[in-house]
Amino acid sequence: MTIFDDLVQGITKEVSKVQTRSQEMLQSYNLVNQVKDLERKRTAKLLEIGRLVCDKYQRTADVPDDLLKDKTNEIAGYEHEIGLLQAEIDSLKATAADPNAPSSARTESKAGYTPTPGFECPRCSAPANREKTFCAVCGEPLKRGGDDVVDVEPNIENN
Image 1 (spheres, rainbow, N blue to C red):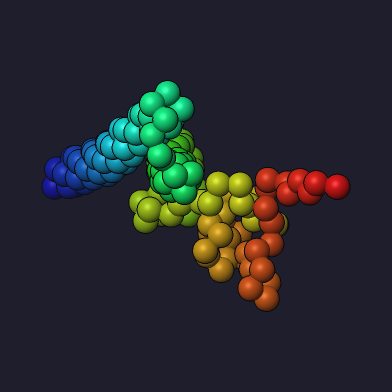
Image 2 (cartoon, one colour):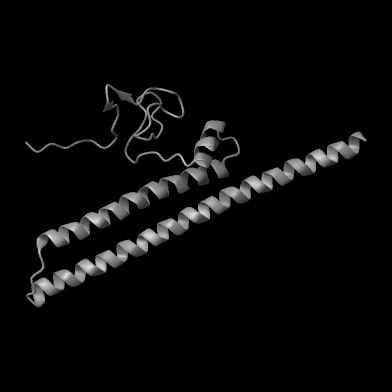
């Protein structure tokens, strides 16, 4: 019976691996579709802005600058969402491609953990989420007294 038990256990283990991989692929597929949808919306908004600018300068139509600013803010929002989704896709790919990835990284990718672009842990320099209190990798506090600890992108001040 032990040979039969070993065979059943081996098959069960392989089926579990296939199920896990198919779930990761499905999640990645859904994220890619969300990115494509946001890119279509961004492109449509860019075309709309182009038409408004053309109307304003070629047809001397009255197009308020506030309207153009609102449209560009919508585009910036789409680009921000695309960046977050792309970071999540990259995280999924990294953990799926690396069988030796730490279990914390696999758990984060399955839980939908998304790091904030340009924000990292002060201790281990791992990408971190600005809205989380602790680093998911090393446990270091990410906020002290309500302030964010580390911003990767430098602030350039005009003198």
